[in-house]
Length: 257
Image 1 (cartoon, rainbow, N blue to C red):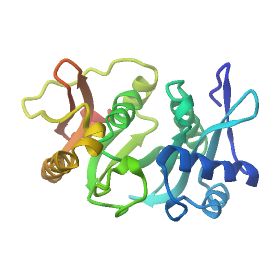
Image 2: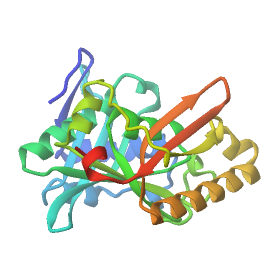
Image 3: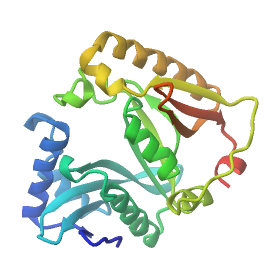
Image 4: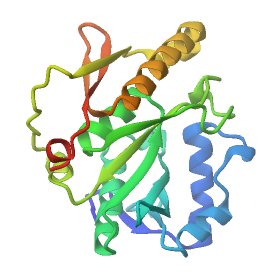
């Protein structure tokens, strides 16, 4: 499993450890008890072919966790990575990346080549991490998938989500996790969908604008995905305060060689 000088990644099954995952949910998302992924779900995930991994420091403190459940799509078993959270004070230390790499290693060892998860398309850091750092692609947009939640991070907006597809054994993913560049095929059909870099702040300071941005982004994603496009890139331009999803017509031979 991936390790570093300050923490290790290991499977979690002990009830005490799994209860600590509930506290991490409260600290990361600000959930009330009603919205927490319950202890019983975490217990079951590890027993039915899913995953529960934790990042544990040298003092034996749990810094973050990841959980996934098995699914079945297109005649094959895959993993749906339902939740990953890292305590706020331990972010930007590569813990999330280490958890995802442990997930990939374990999945490939078991003959599973695909992991999926959903994420908020308005969360800039998550979008960059998922698409650029991990090499995931997106071809599906779900509207208000969870309904209203108690998390302040969601800003009382509909819980729209992009579905990330992580094709674990494809060269695209191997290149991304090795920090190698992926040559992009120039295409006159490429489309960029922009949103402001400060969209998270707008959820609090200007919720009307944030809601309008979400509706516009939703409309364009649904339109483009309906026409066979795929999100394959994500860029950030601080000088213009703009982040952009890069979409191309999906072609497996070029996008997933």
